[in-house]
Length: 145
Image (cartoon, rainbow, N blue to C red; front, side, top):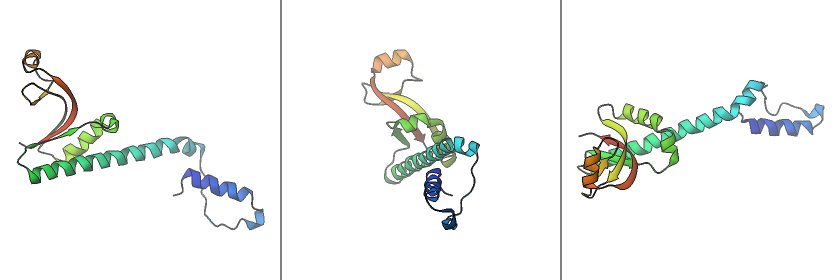
């Protein structure tokens, strides 16, 4: 399937050629107004889905590598890239399908004075005051313990 840009270039080149020279070098398909209005949205969605697949593959591969090379029972992926945050639900859905009996979630973790990461979304406020909190960030967590 030709992109809209390629089709436009072909049409522009045909307009400068005499009608007798319009030998069908490329087969063109008519496009509707609806197609023209929706093509950008469709391309953006294809790009987003590819990004989600790539993100899921990367987190999956990293978790497998961690399990193969260490005795850790959880993998934490720090969410730096805004794409991960914007598409978090879809990424988590993909990971839950690949790790069906593992705990796959998202959490806002902070480093405590004790050197451990604590989930500030579920921690008691009094405990947070005792351990202190240094902002760290959002993570995808895969736990297979």
